Length: 139
Image (cartoon, rainbow, N blue to C red; front, top):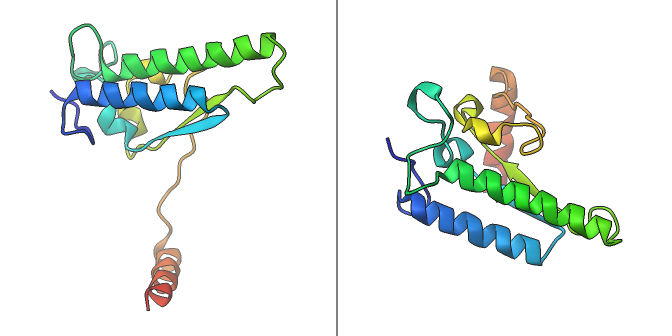
């Protein structure tokens, strides 16, 4: 299968966009890189074997993103070793996913995406309050 992507469905475009975002974030550290819909961009392989999305020559979006995260962590560690104040050379990766269980296993390894927070839809009464508040601001 193929990896849906915000860059036209081409995994190479997603890889190029990830590399550009990470490069810019490293130059401007401290920084946060937000990856929306990670489950659609870096999905696990069908059947769950091995992790990784649709193959591109030699690499998948998930593998490239894992490499980028590792490089960002190494850059932060090197800066700290050179005496930079803690956190000043850090790049944090924040990702959203509707189906986190479908994200490439290489990204869910320790040290990459460290925390997983589940946000559930509000109960009926809470949902109604949210909709009423949103409607009040839309007027």
